Amino acid sequence: MLIVGRVGKPHGIRGEVTVEVRTDEPEARFAPGTVLRTVPGATPAAPAPGPGEQFQVPAELVIEFARFHQGRMLVAFEGVHDRDVAEVLRGTLLGVDSADVAPPEDPEEWNDHQLVGLAVVTRDGERLGEVARIDHAPASDLLVLRRSEGRTALIPFVKAIVPEVDLAGGRVVVDLPGGLLDL
Image (cartoon, rainbow, N blue to C red):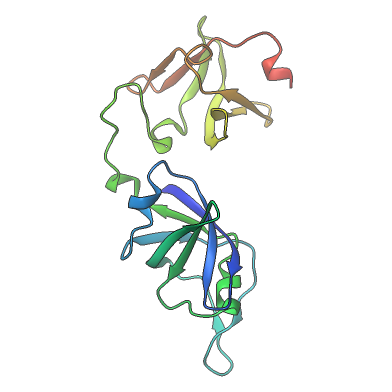
């Protein structure tokens, strides 16, 4: 599954929520009618409209509408029409099936799911760990490196530091400046 967003806090009283966007194509991923798969957060179930029932995060949510407001993505999902139910969605990860995502046309671009799990090696072939995930920071994307001893490290995903991505070989070659992994 390719994560495209994470539900934040409710906005207003009609069930809209803020969404932390994790995709380069928010207009396409959050278009009305789009079905998103869910990974629930840690929020407990909230009372549902029916007596004695609890609202559980469904396996899929359908976008009713989405809009940007003051730099934030606001989304309304079908069947979520009040603030209490919207609160249950807080922290829920939203994704699409990675098989449904076309590979980028540019040979120097990759989707996150293509990189996760690849071995991270130095130019000399020393294995440093594997790519755990990609963090999309304002300055540049960051490879989150899972080290063998269980720690993680952040590697800026820029050509000077990551000169080669070899999908067929299952590896990412890095040329790290001294001390980067000690941070």
